Amino acid sequence: MTVYIDPPTWPGHGRMWSHLVSDVSFSELHAFAASIGCPPKAFERDHYDIPEHRYEDAVRAGALEIGSKELVRRLTGAGLRRPKGRPVA
Image (cartoon, rainbow, N blue to C red):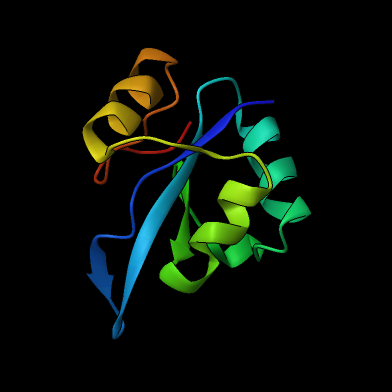
């Protein structure tokens, strides 16, 4: 199982956030997120929003740290990218 996380550089709701993705399947992503106690409501289209204080938890559990551009490249390359404004199939 390989999931990826970018640095917590995305501001929102008074804190910084990371994105957690899989380049294999949403099933893999959901299983990993559940294993670290990430609530289902944190899933947004193609990723989980991870607050800065939970970043190290995800890395310790096995998420690989990569940059934001690389994260999007892997997600897109896997055919799992679901940009805003496009319907989810």
